[in-house]
Length: 279
Image 1 (tube, rainbow, N blue to C red):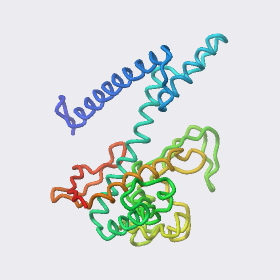
Image 2: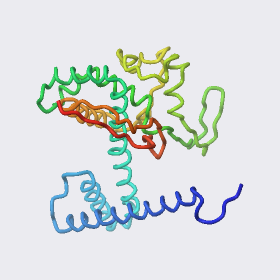
Image 3: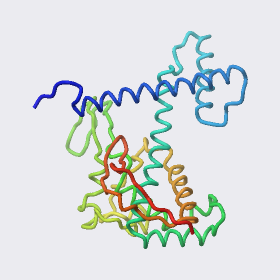
Image 4: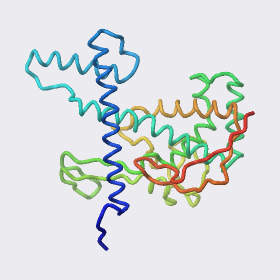
């Protein structure tokens, strides 16, 4: 069936995506321009990643001008890096926390176990790094949430030379996809309860969580290109969840509809309204 006109949902979605892309670019251009002027005027800019990136890039380009080299990042490349900072860092962690609150609302027994662990280590005091690293129950919960609702549902890699995969020779230039969502829900790998929330499967660590001890847990990728921010992301999630558990009990609103939906990352399609009760 063919559709004509701008009323087709796909056309509307594409227009909205283009509009959003322009808005994001304009916003980032303003931030980057302001920061570059601050660097040129000698103001301190070493307190965040963008400042370090711009300062390093401007220094690199200054050195390359003397040697007539073309190295250095263009403004478009800086903008793309800024997008990566956000979507690969803040966005994925916020989605992880959202789904964690959802499943802990659905499984209040695990919410209570996590709260008891947090209060045992910190009481009402702010969590500290050493204590966060000892939260075993919370680690199990976060791993299971990452398995069930991986923020990224597929990883792509492209061969740059002929690669041998078992009995198959793959020529250069082939795009390969790793379907994380399918692997994380495969009952052959995880058992007949693969679709269930069962943090105890990670009680002995990631390596023993699957049926045969095979590596099948890829929320941050794997190998030499594994996400460099995985430890920070988990630490950030533990910090946020600990502070919530210290001060609130929570449950899902009656309006909640369970509908995981991929939009770059996996979101609750109809939102996630909660009821918080102060302790």
